[in-house]
Image (cartoon, rainbow, N blue to C red; front, top):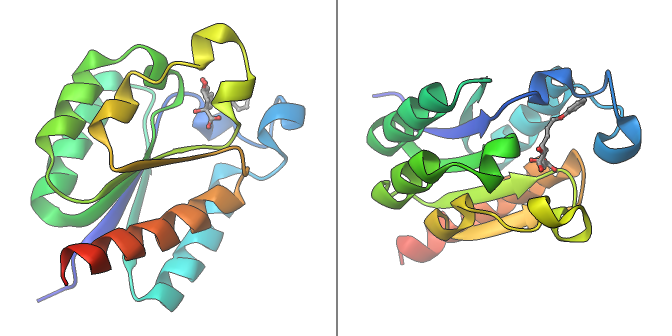
Length: 150
Ligand code: CA2
């Protein structure tokens, strides 16, 4: 049987990474992040299912899919971080290890970005490290998986 994947879900507008606002989000594209993240995942013994959607309902469906088919979840909900009770509910319902990830330090930005609605549904948060944050999130997820299995 194939190993279960770590689902890495990316929310709205993250497909634009590297093309606009490099001073906030850096110059690395989402495709480059996917490549680097998969390389680190291989070193850690994970396989990764990496996805992006601009649609809230699709992200909810994928959180549910991750819970039934995956072994862990890393999610950058994009702007839905600050608004989506639907994603919060989906995350709370999922029992796999879960990490919320942000490229920017949302706590050092505009007041409306400083609150995460979705953070209440995850085990931990990584924010402010740019593209390398995806690799850090994988390492944190490995620690969560190991601590659950001991
Ligand atoms: O810092 C993050 O990772 C965010 O989740 C990124 C979201 C933002 O709404 C959150 O507050 C924090 C925005 C992603 C959109 O990325 C763009 C990239 C290039 C050009 C325009 C948007």
